[in-house]
Image 1: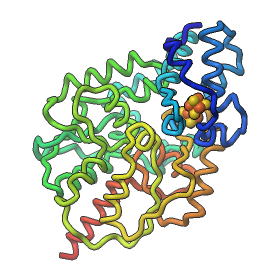
Image 2 (image 1 turned 135 degrees about the horizontal axis):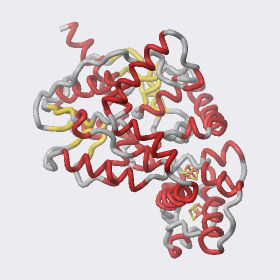
Image 3 (image 1 turned 30 degrees about the vertical axis):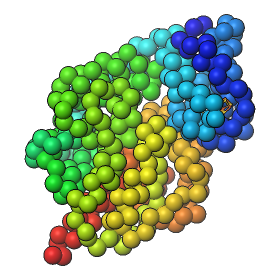
Image 4 (image 1 turned 90 degrees about the vertical axis):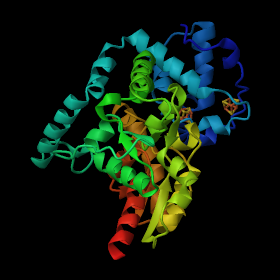
Amino acid sequence: MDLGIDPDQLGTCVQCGLCLSSCPTYRVTGDEAFSPRGRIALMRQVQLHDAPLTAEVTEAFDTCIQCLGCEPACPSVVPYGHFIESTRNALTEHRGSRRRAIALWPLTKPRLLRLGSSLLAVAQRLRLVPARLGLPDRLPLRRRPHQTSGTDVYLFTGCVMDAWQREVHFATQRVLEAAGFGVTPTGDAAGCCGALHTHAGLAAHGERLTENIDAALDPTIPVIVNSAGCGAHLKQHSSHQIFDAQEFLAEHLDRLPDVTPLEVNVAVQDPCHLRHVQRAHLPTRTLLRKFVSLVTELDDEGLCCGAGGAYSVLQPDMSQQVRERKLASINRAQPDVVASANPGCSMHLSAAGVMTEHPMVLVDRALAANSSTT
Ligand code: SF4
Ligand code: SF4
């Protein structure tokens, strides 16, 4: 079966195994089939030798979190992200893409998504939503509208995050404004970026959604993104100037006021899409060090938390095993709060009882505390 991978590129993996310890699914199983090297070997078998797609083979591909922890660890610079994205697309095509496309369709309808989220919020308050779904504790019943304060930058508001965590957007906007930037929230004009579609093997859908965003926005205005997964996708697929929120503000740190830092010990959880794909995880520390009293590093070398887009729903067992490692690392660090710049990661960790906040919320809080004391 053609997985759509360039055979020469498939040959760049020299099977050295240096990526194994960076792979969360290999770390929890110890099984070669759940490692990058094992998965690449299976891709070769399927694409070059027409090996059958047995249940074992598809399980190996389906259980990859697409965290890309293996890419920076690889001395041969094997483009594993491209391999697995292409493989997922071929698998989705093979199995039929209709069900996945229907499941993700509400993301492309922001009003419907917000209405559905409000109904879910009511159901939550009536205790009708099982905790195992891992939804945020109290989804908002209603949301204040976005306000534009200028046209220096766009704030990308997206789909699920805008419905479930709009307060994070408001906090991000206030921080950008404190640095002197006038902000235009993209709102429904731009909508879903297509990251979850691409992750689910629906690359053509994902590309169409990104094209819609590119068409709706002025290409001369930088786009600030506060969701690591969306930012990674847009940096790869959009033609506009895309910046992660912490990355952008760390570059303009001198424009933010000097304040008394919040007395709080913050452990930084690096979303894989920020660390391994955007390679822009260090600015989170630069920014937080100015606004909180203590920034603590986790001791697991940035291993994935197991959230992975819809992975925690599609592969709940593996996702929870991977999360256990992250929870153990958080327990050893004993922070007051874990800063996570990706809504999926923060929800996944919150569902296991971890106190999480977006870095922008912490910075906004420090700025607000300072303004209330002056
Ligand atoms: S992906 Fe890279 S690190 Fe992993 S086995 Fe292949 S060549 Fe080695
Ligand atoms: S993307 Fe993540 S889960 Fe998949 S093989 Fe690479 S390190 Fe392992």
